[in-house]
Structure formats: C-alpha cells, structure tokens
Length: 314
Image (cartoon, rainbow, N blue to C red):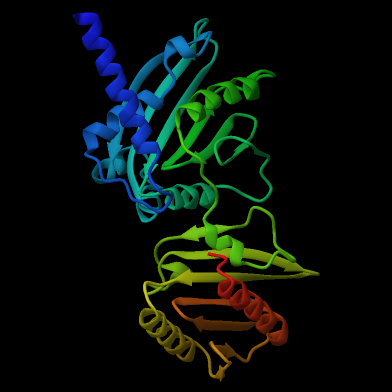
C-alpha cells in the first residue's frame, strides 16, 4: 500500500510540473506560492543527478516581499520585470575543491523571463543553446525558458568549469517542459542593421515614461551611427491614441520643434533636431525610431514596421 501511495504522489507531482510548464506563452502564473516552491525545488538538481557534486545548502526561497534580503541592489529591477519567486541552493564537489550556486527565478510570464534575462545579457556575451537561449562565461551560465530565468555561478574556475556548468544547466533545462521562443513582436522589427542580441522587453517605465508599458526595443547601427527602434502594443486603438497624445505632449515639453504628420492609416510626430525622434500610432500599436540621423530613413523604418503589422507579424 505504501508503495502505491508513493507512486501516486510521484505521478501527481509530475503532472503539476508539466501543467505549470505548459502555460500559454503570455499566461501569467496563478498557483499558490507553496505549490510553486515545490515545483522550483524539483527543478533544482539533486545530488543523485550530478555525479561528483552534492547539495550543501538550501534550497532557500525568497518572494517579492523579502527579495531585498537576497539581492538588495537588484531587487527593484527584478520586481519591475514581474518577479514572483526564487529558489537558490548551494553545491560543492565531493572532494571539497569546487562550489557553485544555482538560482531559479520564476517570473510572471515567459516574456517577463525573457525580459530580465535580456536585461542582464550583452551582445558581446558567448551565447549557447540552453533553454530558449543562454550565455556562458568563465564561471557563469545563465539561460531562460518558460517562466524561468536560471543562473549558475561557480566560485572557482578551472579547465572543467564550463563543462560542469553545461552539464548542470542541461539537468534543469530538461525538467522545464514546453517549447518557447522570443516574444513574437520582435518579428515586426526590421532586420537590416540590427545589432544581434540587442532585443529588450521592458514592462514598466519604458523610455523612462510611466504611461509606456510593455515596450519592445532593438538597437541598430548603420555606419558610425547608432539608433533604436521600439514598439508597444496597447489594449485597444483608443488607448494607443491616448498614449500617442501623451508622448506628443512629452516631446513638446522637451523640445521646441515638434511636428505632426498624417499618413494613410497611421499618424506621426517627430522632432526637428540633429538627432531625430519619430513616433507613430497605428491601430493599437505605438512605436518609433530614436536618435536617428536621418528623418527620411526613420520614416522608411516606420513604414516597414506598419506594413509588417498589417500582415500580422505579431
């Protein structure tokens, strides 16, 4: 009877993890914290899963109300990106010469997990295929998949450190079920002159403005000039019009020369300076080009984005 109960409990736990990982890409997590703690505990590698290593401490769990106790200097940023829960554990080699910390951050949705991951990566990192995407340095491996942002940090470096990080990361990656990719809205951005791995998703205070939320931004470089392209999907056409009006008011408060232009099915505002800022509103979308050296090229970029939106790139 005890054996049957143990098997039944294992099946229930496996189903719980599978259902959590199978959420739709934009669906927020809604389960109770104790249930998610058990899921995160299961995702962490066990001593039996990592040859030559053992768990020496944890797991410890931190929620939104006490995250400052764990990452005081970065807690506010993580909360802005939809942080919900983190599990952290410490590991050591059986001979005592190596040690490592593993952290698994559960975020509000997959796009929020991508957002915090992208906020901490650099285009100059060495990228690897782990989860949806990851990067590896001499003693750090970070990746994201589903609701989770996973960070592995070794406190020693040797010729074997990277191999060990990869093996431990694979254990976690294999436990997170489901197929995920970067947020679909990035397909609406132009490909020409894009800086690789510069995509960002910023949930709050996008461009430093409280009325801009859930912003997508990509860096571009042409010749010696750099510029940024951004896009925000609002809840409705009316909300987008109001956001567009607020941005126009903001630009007028910052610059003397702000002009407005009406195209066939979208509207533009732009500044007349050495570096041009252009913003458009099309349906429920607002977006724009920042720090462009050429107004006509910026307008061409916006026209390309609008045409992609019409074809349903998002």
